[in-house]
Image (cartoon, rainbow, N blue to C red):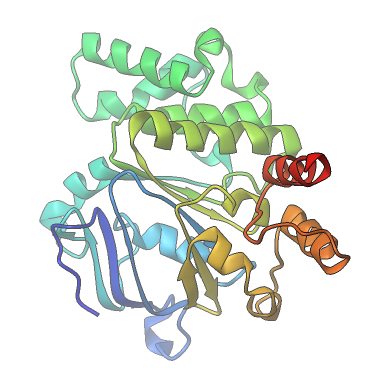
Length: 285
């Protein structure tokens, strides 16, 4: 599959990747093609070991494809001359925030990336303040990073990425190590960045509920792209999801059970608010 490179911010074109080049038959990712447009919120679903994290590292030239091409804003990630510009446009937030936090004070950590870009101090101050406000951590700017909760640390890591002003952030299972409150904090931050800053988001997860608000959902299984569509389209394929170790969100499951028991709910209900609104509408009709 070949894409028009100027139409998309991020493009995977028949991408395969092998960790062991001497054993190229064992591919972590095999013939994967998809696009991410500017301002789009894309969720990638898959069980552990499905190839999701490999996709994240391929998205901004941390890894280079064994075959196929990855383009960022029309630039080939295999082009060494474009590596710096590629990483300016697409940043990656990883699962463990402790692996990304490099300074002992919150605002110093967020400033680290822009300082390495050679940004002027006044601009760095502005970027740091704006980034911390964007993730709800401005009041913690002088706190010690090691005293933060897991969710707070992850939001600081995200702020550090925002301060670099990328056009897209790839979140590689950023909520996997967090408690429910931390998961909500990080997920809300990603949604607000997408909505308020028109930033493209690629959110990689195995938590089904985190895919409900996406523009597009991609399912990966054993390194292959198994399905791509809207949340409604993907969650209507329960057998496909179960076959690759996933399931539908709890609210979708509950809506299906109510429908099977005679409650005339419309199809396509994905979250709690939609279910409650629809159920109350039926009761009041």
